[in-house]
Length: 253
Image (cartoon, rainbow, N blue to C red; front, side, top):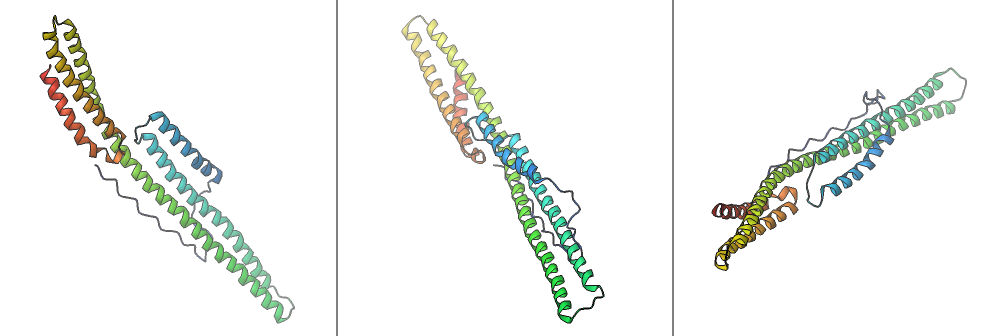
């Protein structure tokens, strides 16, 4: 079995600076669009499985879906950063406004000045808390991105194995078709035989070919039903049965 590709390393969570409200310079993405795609993708997956039939496998559509999921998760990160930029900028404006108010020359007692300073400190704490919350939200979204990337790598590995399995199965199906044609011809030869003595050797050939043909088909069916990453565990049995069928076909050519 081909090994899956190495996983993409996780991104480092951004740390918000005290001297700047901006996290990244990225345009905001509408959240409703991202959520709609997250809800719609499972529906597409279910439909694809129904159309493909009962044999487990991975298609190009599955790979495209996994790639789209990575993009959607990254858009969630961008959205979280954009939302944080807006909120932090607004809160910093409040801090600066309050600080300017405290610096105006007014006649008041020391208690009033202390109260104003406490208000500035409280608003600065709000800014710090918003930054911490934003970093946590961004880290969560980046974890989702990493998970989506790992899922994409797994999907690509399964798709590769699916293509290899199906190519092998196609070759065996062609051999089965050849066996069916040979069996049909032998049946015609039997019908054309003049007596029982001439018919019996032909029937023996038919029975051997039919039995081995059925063994190949059964082995192929088991391989197709196996997990796509484990199909090669069943390949050897199919090859063994197929080789025996090929020998019988050559003997009865």
